[in-house]
Length: 377
Ligand code: SF4
Image (cartoon, rainbow, N blue to C red; front, side, top):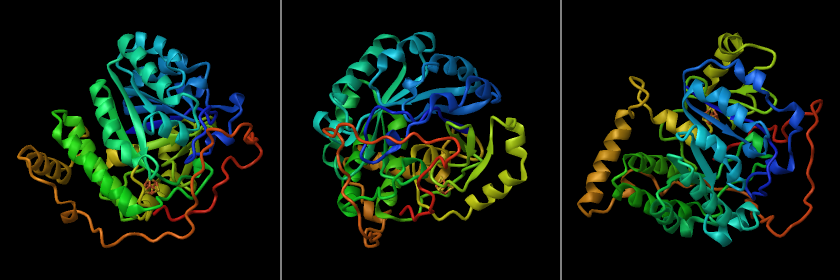
């Protein structure tokens, strides 16, 4: 099973598609080392994320506790404080690090509201490379505002010998906004085809399967059903900064327990847990984030193998690309059926806006402002 630990909702980026930064957690309430010690070992991918995890002063301690519990320990960061990760990488060179990067300088900084964000991230990841890091990369959220430079960005990342993961705009209760829809679904989706072809051209097996993940992103962007059913609760879980355990980070009604009050075993064996996992099987949300997609692509026989349908698609299209033939995406995706949106708001940049109001969410208030279930299409 994969586990994501949302270690904090403090964040010093000001992204247009995620308003966590307007609702920071109080550090005294954030999931503690004592709570995380309760976790068993044997996780596959264990991701420390946020908000921005490097804002936690005890990040190195979190890694000491979690590193032995997982096959892969990952830190997902905005990349503005790489120096805080150097001691961790020196101790555990194979910790996976992903920095969010939405484009080259102008685009990244505009979308993420970051002064000089692009340069800081690139220099930062190079510092981690020099410190001995072996699994370093960037992650981008595909959207109208960056899709034109995605292929160039991918080439830049490959040239610098980093990994490149992609996701697409999503809505989720933790983002404190529910209007993350593409302005023009078809335009964005068609441009993702190019990155898929580019990934299949490489000799990197990981990239071939990322190509399939991007095929799923096209479905997501067009508002179609998921390529493969979700396995939330069976294959992945999320723990939020208040130690609440959720089956996923999209639906706030899939809360299954609290790791402060209960043991891991109590949470996993509860009646509530079983009931909520049952609800996942009929979930109509079409989310396709890295965690939810990667786990769905895995074989039931052995988690390090892909599902047969994934393998078949990858091999077939890898061969096509190798022989210089075009992939006909219309064979796989129905471009005649595109979800129609109402009232999609333009996502504003917070780059030049100073002093945007931040709201400290109090423990006796609701933690999340997105309480209605929405259609994530
Ligand atoms: S498909 Fe449903 S249960 Fe699965 S991650 Fe998305 S919202 Fe959660």
